[in-house]
Image 1 (cartoon, rainbow, N blue to C red):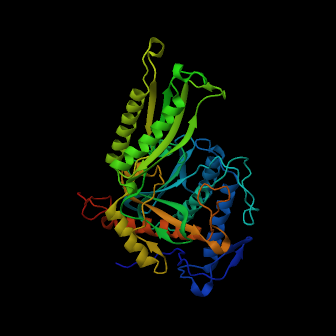
Image 2 (tube, rainbow, N blue to C red; image 1 turned 180 degrees about the horizontal axis):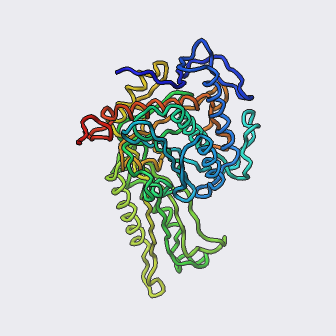
Image 3 (spheres, one colour; image 1 turned 120 degrees about the vertical axis):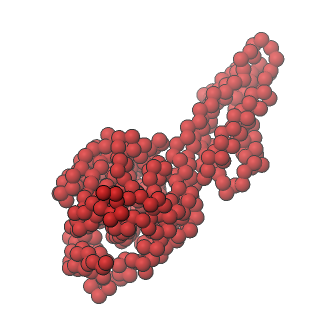
Length: 453
């Protein structure tokens, strides 16, 4: 059955002219916009999304410190008439229910900023961070704005089945991540599918990328304390040098992993080596802090085992005879497994690809985009329910938007915000009406004619 949806929704990536709305340039051009309602409303929506993004950008907060962000989210949801509650201390969860029974889909945005001092550029003068030393350098301000855009579309058209769950999640930037808190506090209860989106500068502005199966890596941290025996640098025979132990350990670890693993399956690096305070003294210990990322548990297990084996070999190598060396050398090892591998559900991903092709023929889509060793705690949601994580490109050399995420001059091409809004809305609405296309299981949902009486 065909039914008309009385909302405004328009094609993306084809607009060449710009219309100022409340001081913000919007790209809607009357002759090129596919509208099912007035053009002025579309312009107003885009301006509203951009304004929200800039407000969030000016007041970033660190992980689990997003109290003012939380207040702003709750206020905006209230203005839209959406019921909401706090979750995971500084997060927010909200629901928009349609007029018909049906499944539930969750849309997630992260909310935290980074400990980065933003630099003034030719673009950000009007919205540069006002919180010293903190910056939305990874696009979470844009994610929140796009989620609000989709929420506004759903509130203005409640003639849909089921429920849209909005998750404004804190603390994506620090393992183990805010997603586990959201899940533990019931944020996914009753949810059948989940969608997340992230802006990245590694592909062109307005394009989207994803892939079925493993998409983003797990993140793992290792911390080693190598314990030697300190003393004067002129008497090395009376010492066990943990600096030399550290050098040998790092070299042997890299070499051992290169012999065992294909380099496409992992990355590993040491971010900090720390030890000693005196130029003429061999220190008692050296600390090493590093991380590694993989796409599967088998590779992670191999690296875990290899770290321990290399440490055991190093300790054995540096043992010295004599009572004064009893108990030396030694080591402490702490391994923290952070975010799991992010795995897009293949059936859900294929359905998203087909729907985007159908609804947005001008959209550049990379359906088999390369895997990345970046990590995301959205992976925890995908371990619980079906769904997809989408990369939204923001690279625009003409506007000098080329800096990578986490840079002190990172910025977003604000034209993509309406693109992300429409993708959130279009995929969610299609899922609510046709969940069988997206899910492997033949589940019954409230309102299905096949549901048992």
